[in-house]
Image (cartoon, rainbow, N blue to C red; front, side):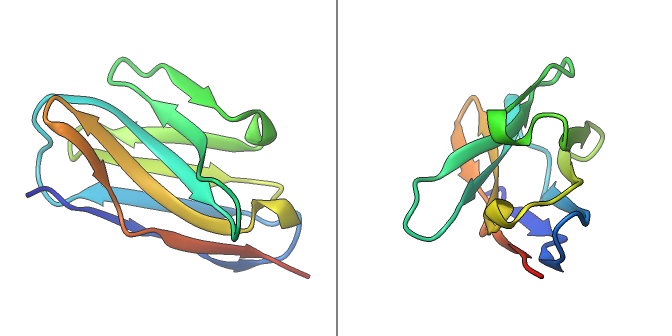
Length: 115
């Protein structure tokens, strides 16, 4: 079974940057999209950014202009460059892959923005 491993989370001050990575343990057959979601305490999980194989991207309204999603098709990896981080970006960030066989979620990586 394919697993997704996220990394890159941590503690950063407001205005700072982080880069999250998500790498699949092996090739995902029938990959349709890879995305980043986040969930803050007592809030619903929300889409942060997504990308499909042709490179088309989409972003949540709150992160447009600050976050950039990219992928490495050679190894089914997806990255999230987060700039100008704000206190409200604090959350656990999850990677998700959508394939012909269903959805695959990572375990999450914590991002804390604090002064």
